[in-house]
Picture 1 (tube, one colour):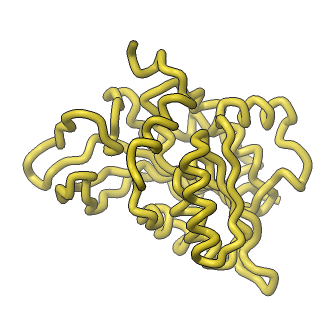
Picture 2 (picture 1 turned 30 degrees about the vertical axis):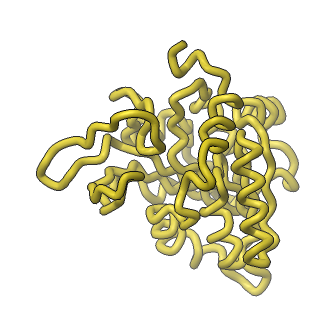
Length: 240
């Protein structure tokens, strides 16, 4: 059975259920950078930064980082195992972050059908990092639902793998066997800033695109290899 024919819930439960922890638990470095550069100062106030929602939150590293900085932070992931680990970590750190196990495909259908929903269903910051799945994911629908979930004046941050990782001066890293590093990504699945904006469907005068670029950063693979990662980064602000 090819990757895209597998049931997404089963795939991700097996992925997270096979190890004590899949990810480091640390915030995505690109997300931390763009929130600090473009979002934090624009939303900070006496009542705190506001409400945030992370899509495909996994074990909650980004959500917990936001919660530690005053956000009323929440996350959604398809894997109940990943969500349980995120909740346990939040409790261990004394944080009030919230997590829900839900298929983003179903979440997107609900949000798109509602046209964005009431203000209670909107957030001051919506983030989606590396939503590039080896199994079926209606990614464009999810991204457009993410945009609809941003409250007026709020921000949308989308970060994606823009290319396979490379060893500096040595070409692409070839992955052998299963693992979290770009698993199952075909060449066409690496979006550019232009393709991300097309998929998001952000239009003036409702949106201001703050950042649409490719960023290169140092990283470590799951096997400890030092590589250069190419991230496609979109930051957009929904205008009031």
